[in-house]
Length: 73
Image (cartoon, rainbow, N blue to C red; front, side, top):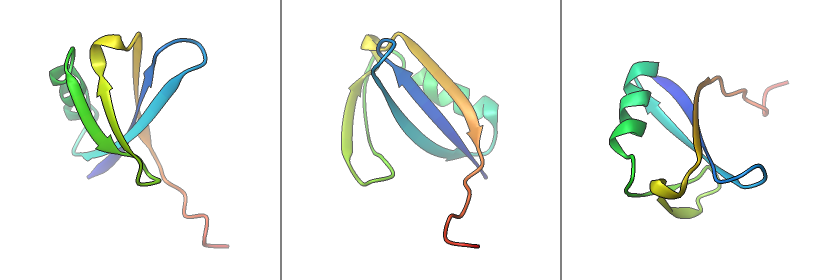
């Protein structure tokens, strides 16, 4: 299972990020496409709850994310 970073851009300065775990880039795309023009909710990595109206988003960016363990030296 891979981790993907999804960034929702509202304008040049405002965005929100979400991380999902799924099998492939294609399945991440399908998730984003299936959520188009509706409300979604999720908790971010800090545990903050978000409700997002995806119809208000101007750009959605998906990228595979490779998390680095910052506790290891």
